[in-house]
Length: 70
Image 1 (tube, rainbow, N blue to C red):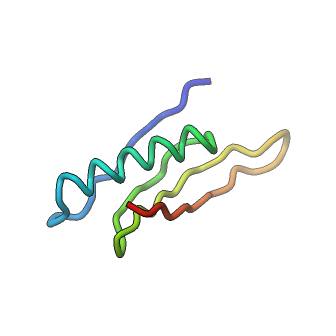
Image 2 (tube, helix red, strand yellow):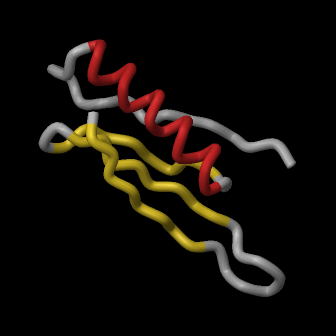
Image 3 (cartoon, rainbow, N blue to C red):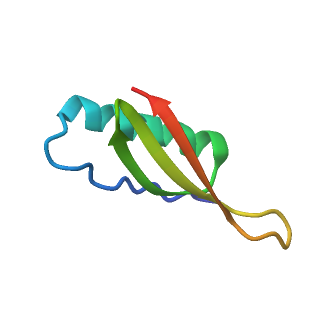
């Protein structure tokens, strides 16, 4: 099963280093929990990453939000 990895644009004014950190954090989270990346943004020195994780069997997919320190 191939995973789609799409990183949403970070708000203007953020540094390139912050954007790179959040992209790397998003890639780690997607690899860890599986699923499809819905969004990633910087907020208060943290990367807020939202992933849609498929349900098992007949369960519905669920959204997982993780905050990762930069």
